[in-house]
Length: 192
Image 1 (cartoon, one colour):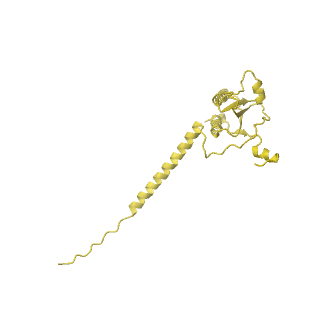
Image 2: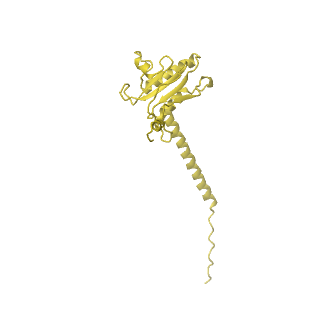
Image 3: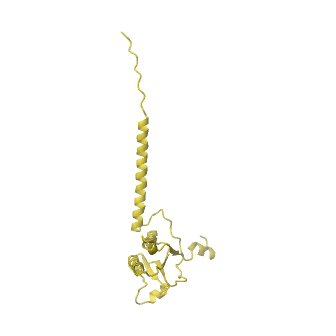
């Protein structure tokens, strides 16, 4: 009986398998990147707090604003400890006419606040829309906030100041921080 010779087993072609693996890898990398960008964009649009964003510095007190001149709107954000606006935070929209919180509290018309965040946002939006519609000079917008202010609120103000037409855009939003709690502790001899 003739002896059969062992047939050579063909070696597999790994080229197509490697191509498929690389295509899958690229697909999942792009999908992950798009999901992250979409999640960040939706968080910014909704004004939500993102854990990856920097925290606002801690402050011992908010202090008083200096040099509120013509054309300046100072957004003063403070905790609503006395439940004045039925929320976690209250907002004052200060200007040259009413330059500080004490003046705003004395004002019987309450045109500078205190407001809830939503009401203050709509008031500021109305002021900016009026200036843009009637070619008034755009105000200088500043924000002063306490340490517990969600960063999403800062993004809300920045989005409000942005406009598609460059001449109607507020390019800079200024942020005021009073003395930092750490600096105050060091200056009084306490540790941080």
